[in-house]
Length: 310
Image (cartoon, rainbow, N blue to C red; front, top):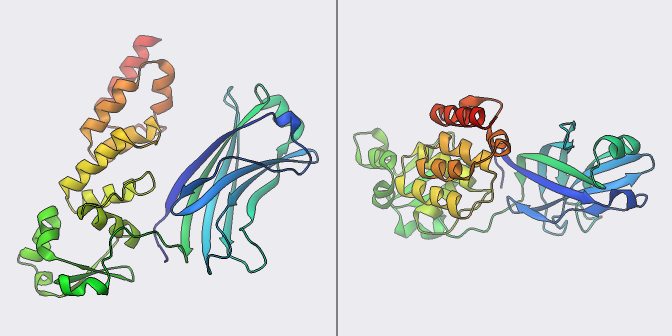
């Protein structure tokens, strides 16, 4: 499967006992799965340097696959110091390996500088922001099938990128005012048996259809794409399920949740976030560099709250 839209995620880890790191010995964070791919961070001592790597733990025996990535690593200190470095790399399967290699920097920062300016209580804090630009051979487990095998139960084919989705007009129209107008309105498309949808990621559309059909396709990797389509297609029930997920189950940061509440007009999520903001540190942690990412009333509320706590 190949996607033209970017998928992004963040890995964070506190590496402890760095003074005891042995030469060239890997120290890993826990494995996290994002977009059906296992990832982890690796820190090591390489002579006089701290080495940092992004590790893709996908098995090379899982067929032919490749993942084009851009990633940014940050080494952060409590006093505000940050070292940032960027890479572009393609992880791919290989007949010569069992698991894909890691990629990063053998000389991210000099060891002495790390110990002096970034280690606190013998710990360092590493953040990796990863963007998947394109992937091939990576398949998400589908919770419901919409291919030609269900064609006898459908009356229209929706083409997204290079993938065809066989669906029922009336059911989809009952969930979305956009599709109600498209299928039942006075549009030329209403008479077509196959319709192309532009500017949509096929994986996001698969997830959207799964939610529409009652499947539990929501997680922290899929919710943004699903919300984007719920907004685009005016699907209130999907929007409501996403908001409920963000409040009850999502592990995204308060800052991200607050920004998403503005972007997708989720008032309940917004109120949920605001109740949790109580200190100056809380306020500073959620304020974005660009305040336009927040609802003006929220920005104003937070700034007044910050002033009152000074």
